[in-house]
Length: 238
Image (cartoon, rainbow, N blue to C red; front, side, top):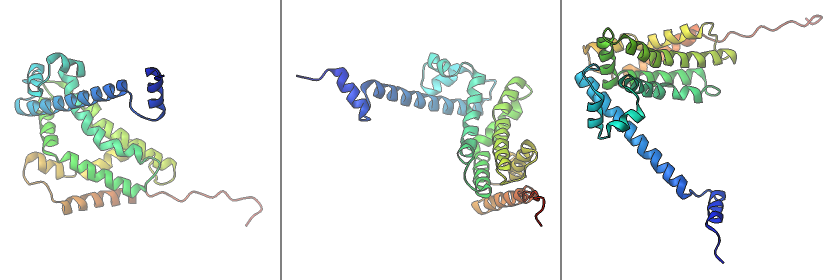
């Protein structure tokens, strides 16, 4: 006698095999991710070519090869679309901090974070988006505020939270985590980003970037080295 289909499905679930429904959901997720990536790539290219104000959602849909309704299903507005581009960059930057919150020596974590930060900051698309946003900020002040809150402010908040956790564990001494986070990012940026934005020099080589990160990390750790915890004397003991 053959086993009912429902029983086969239950056995497949117990054995860890993907059911037809699960496979369809997985395929749908992959398609959605591909569409999202295509949309963000097309939007970034158009924003940089034509500017934020002169780029329409119709143009993005056409360049991405998706229906306009699909574009609006993923992103409700052009502002949301631009913000998503920045969110992806920030997610790539701060993601490892969450995984390193309870493990890893501060020096190694800050070194890896610094290298990732400089790499993202000096990418041609990142520099072009930076120039674009500065140029468009007066015309679209609300967009500028939203992007700042989504991008730089989130990066500082994530680093500040990690620094606060290190202070609580006694690994670092950070009285003002938010200020310390801003100063660390500022040390990394230095004039490297400014020269890149002005286009007055080519991207620094690996040796120069390594030296910049090491100097920033060493300086930061010297200022925030953990202090020995005070030992409370026990009465009657020498």
